[in-house]
Image (cartoon, rainbow, N blue to C red; front, side, top):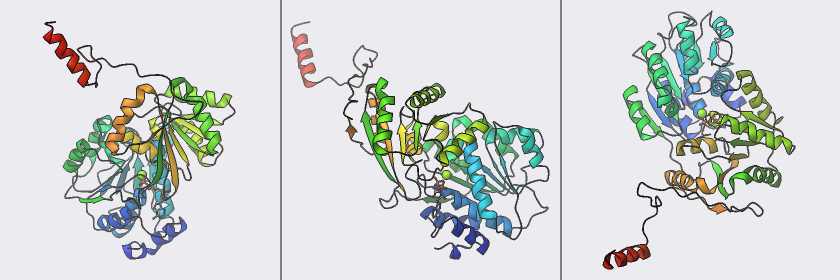
Amino acid sequence: MSFESSGLSSALVRATRERGYLEPTAIQAQAIPAVLKGLDVLGSAQTGSGKTAAFALPILQRLLDLPRDRPRQVRALLLVPTRELAAQVGDTLRHFAQYLPEPLKIAVLFGGVSINPQMMGLRGGADIVVATPGRLLDLLDHNALRIDEVGVLVLDEADRLLDLGFAEELNRILGQLPARRQNLFFSATFPPVVQGLADQLLRDPVRIEVPLAPETQPDILQRAIEVDTAKRTPLLRHLIKEHGWTRVLVFVATKYATELVTHKLGLAGIHAHAFHGELSQGARTQVLADFKASRVQVVVATDVAARGIDVARLPAVVNYDLPRSPVDYVHRIGRTGRAGQSGVAVSFITADAEAHFRLIEKRQGVRVPREQVPGFERVEVAAPVLDAHGGVKGQRPSKKDKLRAAAARSRGG
Ligand code: ADP
Ligand code: MG
């Protein structure tokens, strides 16, 4: 299938060309016709595979084709888990919509900024709303918009939106949507619990799963470097210098760590910025803009930056701290190696993190060879985790141990 033959109008095809899209990606080739038919879709394809256009293009087409009662009523609602992703998806929609015969109004709503301008912006109504759940609910509570005419609901990064953290907000939103609507759920990962929830919400969905074929697999080289906890910042500096990384996204576990690591890099003359959920929205937007424009070399972030964000030509992602869940690992490393480019994802493996990284590897079905970097060799050993019986957890008795125990018993001990 080509964009021309996909059922999209020439105005939309023209906008894809200008974005440099020559051929649809696999998820786009399968999702676009299904969405145009009005079917529910459960789309899963790896990070960087072009899921945004897979729903954005056919939704714009449908809004053109379908009749409406009055102008500027919200007919498509796109929910996303983070503010940055809301802005990014909004930008993509606006780009694709620019040559449409009748202009569509696209409202982007997210928290962390003053609510008033968003209320003003909604005065004349909107055709498409892209929103994070919390701010959408605030605006609904203020009667700033109505969503009871929504014909298409999209959950981007659906597994995240369907997990417990968003459950209450999502339920309140679903309660205000018309029961008859098209549902489009997209994500790179669909853990089984989420799959069950999705099944309850979708109506006879077309399931699109783009398999991880080797030739379409993002070109991400995974590396695991053993290092001591206290040597991680020097090692990071060393790697940045050695590889000449122009841009690096570094993930840490806490807001405090984003600031600490940023500070330490700054002392070494590396231009770094912290990025976490408690920064003002203005600061968050600025950091990402500076990063994309190469005014900042390193962004040190919490998992708030792990989802959806598309930074072109990001050569490296570093897990300074490992993510809590294997799913987050997939999303973090998926910030690099996007749209056919190659990237490297480096994980720092301290002695205490070894067992957790083994779990991450197991879930992915990969084994990442451990490396040591000369001058930064790991010397710490993991603190033993004792089980309820005072034994070392996870360590089965060896043959020798068993023989010793048997000998002790036969001695009548
Ligand atoms: P995902 O949501 O699957 O992680 P995105 O929609 O963010 O991926 O797209 C990843 C990158 O690929 C973006 O920079 C996007 O502009 C680019 N892209 C998407 N579709 C195409 C295409 N058909 N041809 C070329 N580049 C594309
Ligand atoms: Mg995406």
